[in-house]
Amino acid sequence: MSDQDNKPAESSQQDPQEPSETPSLYSYYVLGLLSVVYIFNFIDRQIMAVLIEPIKQEFGVSDTAMGFLSGFAFVFFYTLVGIPIARWADRGSRKTVIAVAVAVWSVMTAASGMAKSFTHLAIIRVFVGVGEAGGTPPSHSLLSDYFPQDKRATALGIYSWGVYIGAALAFPIGGYLVQNYGWRVAFYAVGIPGLILSLLVWFTVKEPERGNVEITEANVEHASLGEVLRFLLSRRSFIFIVLASAVQSLSGYGVITWGAPFLSRVHEMSWAEIGVTMGWVIGVAGCAGVFLGGKITDRMGLRDAAWYMRLPAIQSFLAIPFIVGFTLLDDTSMAIACFVPFYFLGAMYVGPMHAMVQSLARVRMRATASAILLFVVNMVGAGLGPLSVGVLTDFVYGPIYGDDAIRYSLLTVGLLGGLASILFWQASRTLAADIKSRDD
Image (cartoon, rainbow, N blue to C red; front, side, top):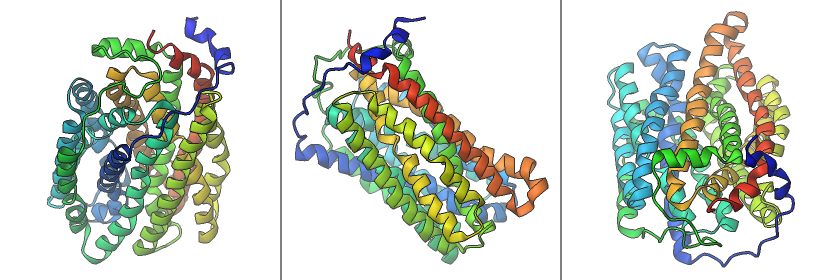
C-alpha cells in the first residue's frame, strides 16, 4: 500500500482557508469569452443528436452506425490528439492553441454539410474532433491562472455552461433547421460563426503568468509526459476522479445523444417539439446544476476539500430514480418532468471535477492533466455512451421490444451512472492530502 493510501484522515482535519481576493473584471471577460467559445464547441458537437434520424434515413444506415458516427468517429481522434496538443499548451501560448483550434473545428463543422456519403461525413467529423481537442485543456489551464483554488470550481463551472447552453441551443436550432431546410444547412449555420470567435481569442486574450494566483509557491518547472503521468498516477484521488467521471459521462452522453430519438420513437413528439423541450431542459437544468455544484463545493471546500468530491458522490446516487422515471413512464409530461432533476443532478459534478484536476496538477501540467482526464472521459463517455445505446437497441432489446427497445437501452446506460457515486466518494478520501503535497 502506498503512502497516499494512508492519508484519508487528513482531509477531515484540514485547516480552514481564508477566501482569496476577488478576481479582476478582465478575468471575468476572459471567462466569458472562453465560455462562449465552449458554447459553440458544443453546438457543433451536440447538433448531431438532432440530426441522427435524417442522416440515418438519407444514407440508409443502422442505429449502430449512427452511434459510431456520433461517438467514436468524433471521439477517437479528439482524444488521440488531445494530449500532444495539451503538451504544446503547457509549454507555449495557450491562447494561440485555442484560437487555432476554434478555426479548425468551425471550418470542419461547416464542411460536414457537404458530405456525399456516410463515410465522407465520418471522415469530416474526425477533423471536427481534432479541432475541438485544442479547446478545453488549454482553456482550463488558462482560467486556472486567472482564478485561485477557492474560486476555481465556480469559474470552471461557469465555463462548463458551454456544454449545456451549447446543447440547449443545438436542439431547437437543429430541430428548426432540419425541419425547414434539411440537415446540411444546420451544419453550415453553426460552423461559420466560430471563425469570428477565433479572432477575438487571438486579439483580446492575454497569456497570464503561470501559477500567479496560487496560495503557496507553485512548482513551475517543465515536465516530460512521462513525469506528468507518473506524478498524476501517484495521486490516488486523481485516479478515482477520472474513473468516476468516465462512468458518469457514459451515462450522460448516452442519454443526451439518444434522448431526441427516444422522444420521437416512444412519445411520438415532432422534431420542433423535441428541440424546444430538450433545449430548455438542458439549458436551464444543466446550467443551474453545474453552477450550484461549483458554488456549493467552493464554499464547503474552504472547510474541507473532501466536499469537492463528496457532493458529486451524493448527486450521482440521487439521480437514479429519475432516469427510471424518464425512460419507463408512458405519460410524456411525467417523463420529461423526471428528466429535469436527472439532468440537474447529473451536471453538478462538472465544476468540482475540472477544478480538482487543475488543483491536483502542478501548473506546467494542467493542460496535460485536463487532456488525460478528457481522454478517458470521452473515450468511455462520448465514445461508448452513444455506441452502447445503439448496440443495445439493435442487438439486445430490439428483437424483444421493437420500437420500445430504445427506452430499455437508455435505462441500462443511465443506471450505470449510479456507480460513479462510489468512485467519487473514494476520491474524496485522499483529495485534501494530495492537493497539499502537490508541490513537494
